[in-house]
Image (cartoon, rainbow, N blue to C red; front, top):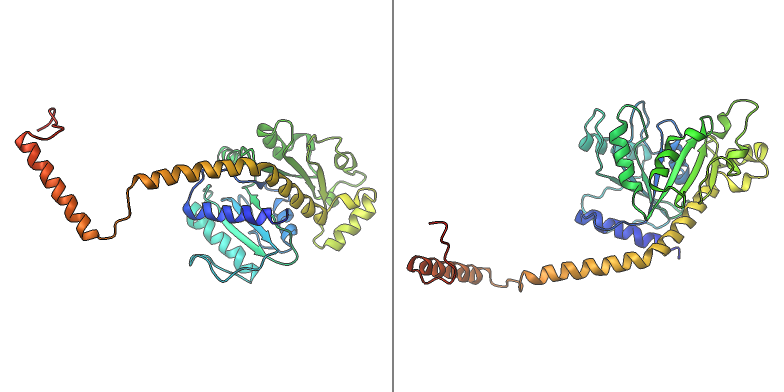
Length: 322
């Protein structure tokens, strides 16, 4: 079943190449406010700092991130670039964002595609969406809803532990399209930045946020070792069910099961589309082998029809125009 995710990633590549958005593929959309720690969650899953940083709205185009344990092949489109320096990746994301969205606060739905090949990651398909902000709330909200309205999309709602969970913007948006929380997984970040004397035990136990796919906590700590040490100290009974490693495995498992459930519908949809386009292709006639002869036939036919119209012997004569 592990091979299902790379298959979906290949389908994603095909549809991106032909520019078609006619089928809704299973994926994980990451939703959160600007200061929720969304970028840190994504980078921890990849194991590298690669996303642009700054004030204001930094993510202004959807970023389709595909961590993969595969090694990149030698074939591919000429426009595909391969980087080994993560600083260059960050710069390229910024350049691509400015190229389409401009250098101001422009938002675009045209996604950036990034594949990370590493033996230390699990196969995933993540869509990093712009952070929810008051500045351009309507544009960003519409963009987020467009992606998470896909019934084949798992929503990863990121909320900081040092904010009010009951008013979480990420969960509020998720509930608009997933009212019963069946395809929402909540991630609570910044566990180590909570006020002294407080903890997130009730939240991590699922007593505060009603989501069916579960809830996973994550501190700010960069290293996995430091993260585990914090969880063991602060939440010893929940340490094994929180943190980056558990989050990565959970997302991988959820996506595989989700793809398996969506597969029959996807197969039917692909077969219908293939039949439709095959019929359309057939309506164009046989391939043209001799272009000169075909052109001569068309000119001769046109000339004959023209003469018939003038002489009044044509089968269909237009009477409303000269």
